[in-house]
Length: 359
Ligand code: SAH
Image (cartoon, rainbow, N blue to C red; front, side):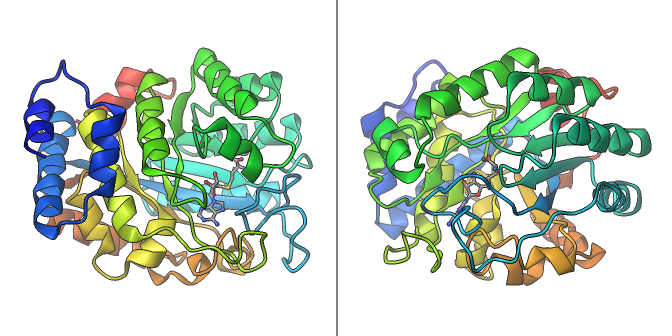
């Protein structure tokens, strides 16, 4: 533990896989407290006190894939499927940006080919016409041209998790899909110019601390701009219904380890963790290395059907209202942090503009 603390003081020294997995296995409350506080200091030193609030709009729960953990997988017949119309998506974005002040939005869906390249481009253009906003797309594996055209239309970020860096575990959990393809997508997304948010799911059945440690190292290796990590939650209508959900402590340890490894990166508090962590979860994560947050803006009538995992759709901190945004802002201020007001000079942001917006 002492070695790890010493090592993190030196920017040139990197924690090894062994040291990271040691952190992830730690259980002693006193040691953990010291570790969280160290991550908090590193957060303050490298990314200062700004907190960015991202809003997520889940516009379709149709999906062609069958990821074993996911509630909107193709074979889940119990789910009512929906697609928001282009008009509805644009209106929610307009409301979020021009009424509530959101600067960053994520448009997310299952892998739904009904939203063709042309439709996606139209959505992006119409949103960018009305709103000064940084747009992330989170729509899964699509062809190069779709991503290139979306970038030209004005979406400058992607949220695309690699889910796990263990190729064997990846292929077990994602029937018909290949780890190499996922990573290849990330690489050409970067080449197109996208800012990339990516990371693992934490607490997956079959995942070890060592594997999670390699996930963290991978985020740094591919230089993601934001480490987006989910916490695995068991969904009863999936093949993994008999397993255990990931524990909130493991999420905290993972964001802490991620902050110690990749000091100047953006780390959001993600919804799955908030579902299981309870009342103080958000604050704890902000004090353990996190520096941004994702709030759900999906309209009430659809939200309950974007049922990736249970508990998500009832989370009261995420109701589609300006109240939940205000609550988040109140917490951010009570921690003596500031809400990000801007993110660069114009619509075509570079990676450094994006990071500059957070300093
Ligand atoms: N189709 C897009 C978006 C996927 S859904 C894509 O392929 O990138 C968004 C994220 O939800 C997934 O990347 C996954 O990490 C997460 N997720 C799915 N099922 C989950 C579960 N049971 N518990 C926690 N997170 C889950």
